[in-house]
Length: 335
Picture 1 (tube, helix red, strand yellow):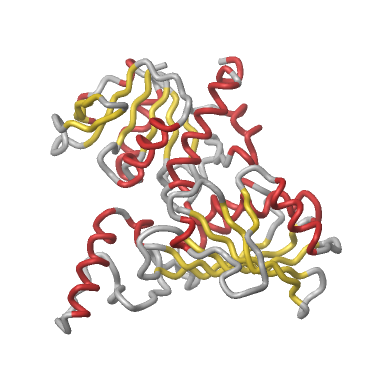
Picture 2 (cartoon, helix red, strand yellow):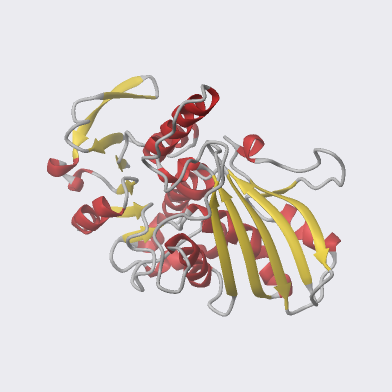
């Protein structure tokens, strides 16, 4: 089993590398691939230095699976070229809504892995991934009609440069110096920015529309979802305040039981000081955590949740690796 990571020097690429080192995939040869400026660099994997190869000249016929973790522009240029020789698991948004490309969270819709046509599988947006993994067991039991979600997203969702800028801006603010934003539309340090990605004509941002469209594709196209996405001065982990309306009556006991029993979910919900999960505590953890579980008394069959997950893991690298594990376990579904 030979595997390549495209974008191996970036946030998600390095996190993918960490996961492959921890988990039990049997890898014969690992190829680290990035832009020409990173070509020749060395990155350690399982105690050995691995050279970084130039994407422009890399031969994808050497590998069985390629993880693409380098953004939509790179996926647009290289994913289909790679897919002529190997299976591509793409972390970018480029193929997510392509009807011939399955958009997969393994715990939610792994059967879609049997419908691979272009030899490409798409990873969902990080905020969508943690949402649907919590919605799936509840939808199976009570049927979700409507979702209202507000996200509180870390700067790592935008890559390494925004993470570095948050640190630099924080230092400048504390030193009472002038702040200039380069990766954000406004100052991010000690602030909240209700704007992620570009605006559409109806006033929603692309990030908000991704959540709606991707949830429908992954879980159920009958679900109505409206989102407001906010960037916060947090390094890692996305949080979501979620309001659900079900078609069927529910009990809080059954909700908690269903969530706790579902792969990848963990309920932390004590009604006391600190009896909930925050972004800091979710960092580095595989689980999607659910807290503040309570009825919404303003609507029939309404429920409120607080969902937190490490966006670099659950929303990107971990989901991609779990897709690969599912494919390998099922012998690539007979391919």
